[in-house]
Length: 364
Ligand SMILES: [Zn+2]
Image 1: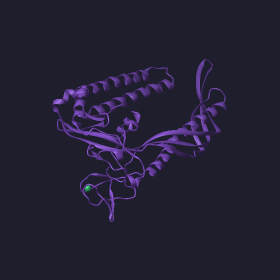
Image 2 (image 1 turned 60 degrees about the horizontal axis):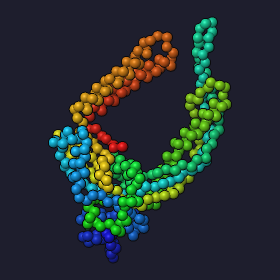
Image 3 (image 1 turned 60 degrees about the vertical axis):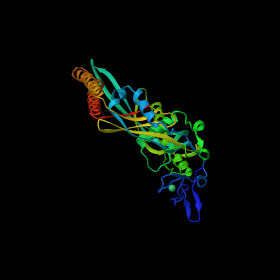
Image 4 (image 1 turned 120 degrees about the horizontal axis):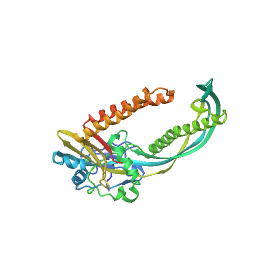
């Protein structure tokens, strides 16, 4: 098993014997002389498992994707693989429960549309009303939290890997190997050092569980306040908005389950197509593509332009027609105006996408 050695003057690399930089939080110290990872497992006192990735035949993962993706197969003559590498990402998966007694005093604004006929003429008018209510809610919410044990990392490519890992049922239970039994000669690839200690991960998870709960509980209180205000109003009133005079959402969170520190294999391929560089990321344990930047084909670009024009034409056409028709209520006119805006937004957005060269895909 690999591990840094304590000597009289501190930790030394077990491969080349040079001194290692080690702080109390260090889990893995990557030797700055030979670049190999030294595991300070004893120092951490926390289980670490490694989900093995393929160490050989990484190229095959990439070429299998090129052959199986219809868009990419058409480009394959001009696609050149520049590099492909295996990196292990350290991850905690944590289950936390947040709970508390929330309470608030709100002013709820309601409106009612009244239609009446006076001397054969139809009149409409809007009535307003404000109701003060007090609401409370006992809550207990559980959250699954994934935490990459790095101070900073490239979220754009790592987060899809982590989401895929969770979607697959977190296979460390079946695939993971305790660090003690890992053969480092077989496991090639770079390991990103874990920079976040388990205790810090727990405290992060508790904060995160409370943060996520806050908005959920606030919405629940808001909808209770609206229901109460409707109950306290004459028939026909509809709640529009809620102003909080007092809003208290205290939170206590506890971690009920936490995985070992899992080292997740990530395969990153860098390739060029017509002089531009693109990246694609695969899950190292099963070879599935989890993130990709694909060159955009001229055909796809055209289809998007076409789609944009047709869609916006339909929407704004519909909107304009509605606006020109006479004798419409304000509401119908508002819907017509919305149609025009939606059409403009859609064509703007689609045209913008189709002018880019890269189409980013997160494989769901
Ligand atoms: Zn070394």
